[in-house]
Length: 424
Image 1 (cartoon, helix red, strand yellow):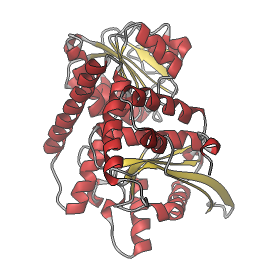
Image 2 (cartoon, one colour; image 1 turned 135 degrees about the horizontal axis):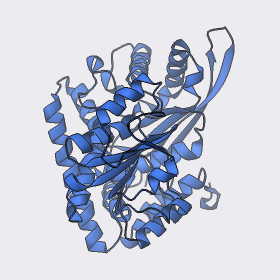
Image 3 (cartoon, helix red, strand yellow; image 1 turned 45 degrees about the vertical axis):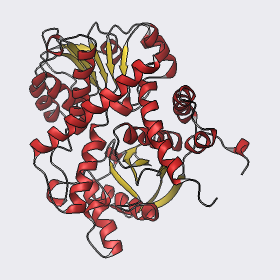
Image 4 (cartoon, helix red, strand yellow; image 1 turned 120 degrees about the vertical axis):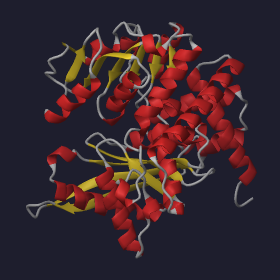
């Protein structure tokens, strides 16, 4: 195929390419390696049937994308969401390559998704959908090829169904084919909190390099799912920061004296998974949360939450990207001009994939670690790689996102260079 016929899957992927190219140009990346790394290595689109409880057969579309596997098997989650599309999945796979590389994990980037609103289906229907989808993509999957994990609207039960489906299809139990499983099926201690813990660790590191005492910092967290709630809990209880606002799809809540996160989590769990109506704070909108006068803002929902229109009103000194791609290119330009210190998603929320790596290693060797060991190992890696990125930022006089890409691209490019192009 002529190179001129290569097109990004969509605007989100094009934005991801621009982020990559900004860093690639700073390090004068070899043109051949640059061409190779700009594009997904493999894209699989599947259309598959699922029988509903009433006997009706409904068709679904799903995707699995592997961006690059030069450093090891692809790694990345599978999401269930009504807005899943190829542009989103390919972009997330692209970012996973750099996320794994910036953490120096022996993985490449992968991602998957099914276009479905799981709230509209029974548990049995979701099980049938999950098993059929995993069978459809199994040609790309394996503990040494591609290792999926939970993402938006998927969980440890769905990972258990994936593992069982793969194992039944190959005729042997293969625990290491997915991560994020229940602990009693080869899952790792600390996996559910891992992304939020990683976000909290780098928030503390960012505050430190800026001369801010995290114990006196005020924090707003957008998104109160797994990542947002664990971040809010850990950054307040273990690091001493004051979380004054959180929000979810139903709206937000603000308390200038700080929120009791354990109490708020209990309220959410007792009220259909939403925080709307929480009585111990003032109701606010998601936009109001993003523009609060706080020290640290943590967007931990979906991508493109911070637009140029919102960026001009943001007052936070530090943004820690708990979500993937929460800041648009235009917004980031505005924020950097204002002097906001942004810790990018590929570094900030990499705690999840790091503990997924721990789970994979434990499954392969059939030897499991306790929670204290996992937390210590995660903190050591997050702190070390934050330091590498910050050092690179200073060296190249650039922003943290570009610095993270420089670190990651250099590691992937070295693997490509050492392996060469087969066949020659």
